[in-house]
Structures are given as C-alpha cells and as structure tokens.
Length: 237
Image (cartoon, rainbow, N blue to C red):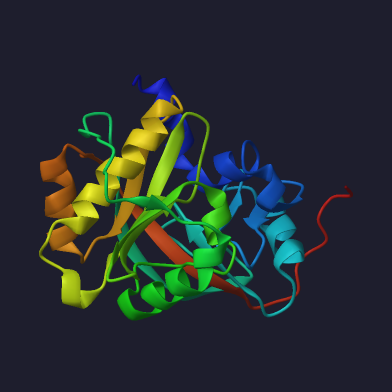
C-alpha cells in the first residue's frame, strides 16, 4: 500500500460513513455517525472546523454522547470528555491470511449469542446491528459460540477487524488468531486490506497482532464526548 492509500485511515469513521457504509449513517453537513443500534462511533470531516462540530452537536442532540475514533488530543469548545482512551492503529498488509475449516459465518439468527459473548468478554462497542457491517465468523464448541471476529469500519480499500473475542474457558487455544486470519482472508478476497485497533493497555493482544504480521501505523485516541452547551447555529443544509 502507498502512503496515499493510507490517508483514509487518518479519519476512518468519516471515510467509512461517507462512502461504502453510508446506508448505516446519519449525516449532517460535515458530521456523521453510525445509527445508534449499529455503533456509537461518530466523526467530523475536519476536527479544526467549528462548523463541523456544530453539525455533530445538532446530529447528536442535547446531552448525547458520541465516541470518536481518531479523536483530537484536546476537547472542542462546547463539549466535555466523557470517557475513552488511547489505542493503537495497526495495518495488515503483511498479515498471513487463511480460511479456517472450523469457522462458520454468523448470521442474524446468531445475534443473541454474539451479544452474550461480547457482554462476557468486552472486546469493544458492539450493538444489536453491528454484525451487519461486514463478515462475522465464529467457532462453536458443543454447539455454543465460543469465539468470534468480524468487520466494523470499512473506509475505501480497507476493512477494520473487530469484535475479536474468546470465551474465557477456551482461551489459550489460538482461536482468536485463527479467526483474525480467516476474516482477513475474506477481506483480501474482496480486494481490501485489513487493519485494526487495539487498546493501548492491551499489550498482550498488540504483541500477538504484531507477531501475526500487522504493522504499527500510529497511536490513536478513542474519546467519548458529551455536549455541554447548546450547539451554535450551523450553516443551512
């Protein structure tokens, strides 16, 4: 991949929401967010543009919180920090991908089990419709879903691997790595390149991803914001 190809990863949610994942988006001017049942992520086209933040305030509504990947270091006027933390962004140009014979495609019918597994393992935000964003694969043991991984943000040319989780009783068997490679294979077959984010404190997972062939591209903020004052009037739309 060239450096130009990676530019969309500087603001991945905006790129995804205004391109291939537009059907999952609410957009107002220079702000966009996933519909709440899909993902809590939101974005602005230009983080230095007060009008874009005003658009986001109107989009979010009074008192609402938004979670922004690739958030600025500071806090924009009219907002307060409501959580989040520091993560890393890794790209998978060198990831060795491979289908997995035990992995099954998860469908809407698997939704309750997926939500239960996420609730027990807490891999990151996952809502009732998150699985609609891309391919999700799982591994079952004794009929029960014990591990899964899938796709979330999909900026042009890229697909974010996400919701990588394993039931605690089945950890240490390499299931997560197998599913990452399998979802990565589906991404490559489509002509895209995998990337992912991990919490900066999750050093074990980061070491595993680097050993699998991911490259550290940059540190990245995942900040939650809450409106503190009424939004200033944004331009007409």
